[in-house]
Amino acid sequence: MPELLNAKNMALRKPGERPSGKRDNMLYDVIIIGGGPAGITAGIYAARADLKTLLVTKDFGGQISLKAVEIENYPGFEKISGLELIQKFENHFKKFSIEIIYSTVNKIKKENDTFIIFTEDKKQFQSKTLIVASGADPRPLEVEGEKEFIGKGVSYCVTCDGPLFKGKTVAVVGGGNAGFETAQSLAKWAKKIYILEILETVQADETNINQFKKLKEKGEIITNIEIKEIKGANFVDSLIYRKRDAEELKTLSVEGIFIEIGSIPATQFIKGLVEFNEKDEIKINPKTGGTNIPGLFAAGDADDVPYKQIVIAAGEGAKAALSAEKYIRELKTKS
Image 1 (cartoon, one colour):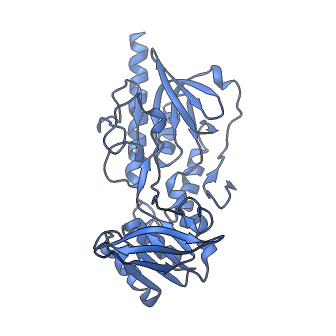
Image 2 (spheres, one colour):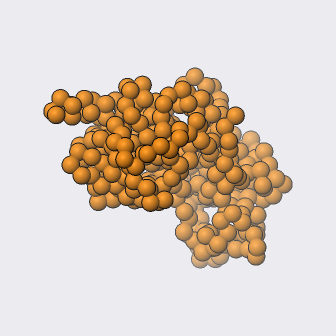
Image 3 (tube, one colour):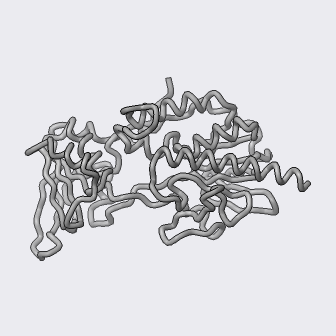
């Protein structure tokens, strides 16, 4: 059975990691950055094309192993948890000869037709092509007390931390689908769940809203609010907010706060090399996944393709790998 990370991460780990060898001097056909659905799929397609492939990732599974508790829109599975889906991805992935390094990339450069990536543990690797599938990180609320109470009541991962709030009162910040899905997951443990939304109405699908309404008095929605501060002693005990059409500050007593207000593309390490849009997403050619740099492709939540869905990320990963294979073939014909 695969090893699980600790409760802070909960992503599946080390699916048949290959021995390190002398990777520093090896020229790979493709290096994939990121181990979510896009990166995993890209790796499978690259390996099937007999490309010498290296996957560099800080974890295996990406966001779906952290956030998606019940998935109902991935073909072939009427309902499956994020961890279960990643388990199936892992079982498939292990059948191919793909090297894996668990690290974070902090710099990339290109010299002639070769990409060089630098990791946080001061290693570097070279490849003919590069697929950036680094995904996105949770967007912070950026209010006083948030950083102080991370791991002490503030969380961005219901899969990791939800069971810790059995019998407690919690707030979910964010009235989109992710917020409602998080609230529905918390219903297994928490005695009271508030959904807090900055806009006048919540933005989730009717299906998610109706599911939450079934909680009756256990669930409550508060809209049109601005959160000012998260408070507590050793752990969270309340948050301070105001209605956006009033000045009066109010206190909401909660023991846990789950923040679900979107994500930020994890693309800082490649700034200055490729073109970005205003959201810090990598601009790609939607037909190929290619960027403005020949041989460099992007897939998943790191790129500017709309609709951040698991099935779309997987498709983007496949497309990027197929395009990388074509690019390598063209390089060979030129040499």
